[in-house]
Image (cartoon, rainbow, N blue to C red; front, top):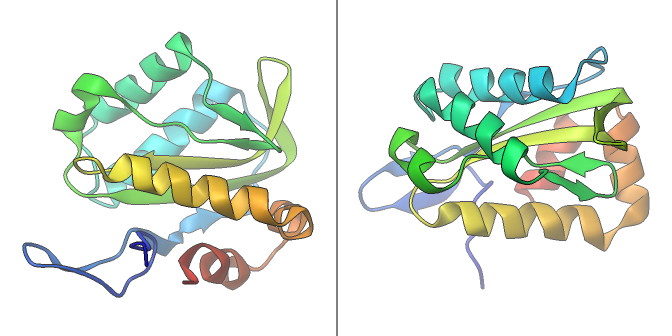
Length: 159
């Protein structure tokens, strides 16, 4: 059985209880903005949550400039890589919902999911997000349109 990095029930010997996704980091019905503003917004929430240092935001922008973080299905997953790891204090994700979509080089992202993974946890977080958005097209459509934070939270924290 794999570790669900979104669950608040995760225990690590060195950290105790870990909340990777907090309800206050799920923001719905946001007004349209450009992709860089959306990435900065996601990064600012990660900073506010104590997950990353401010410098991580620039690393997220740099990553986007190197290779788009749009992964398809109306979802983008901005994150920092490489040297950005030094700016991560703890793993966390934020979910921003844009009903009108954010333009990622001609593709519309309706969900912008900012992530920061401590150590190698970013790979597990990316895999968990990819599984959630690829396994049920109807659920993905509902995630894009819902006004219910609890629905998104339970979808991303279910075992």
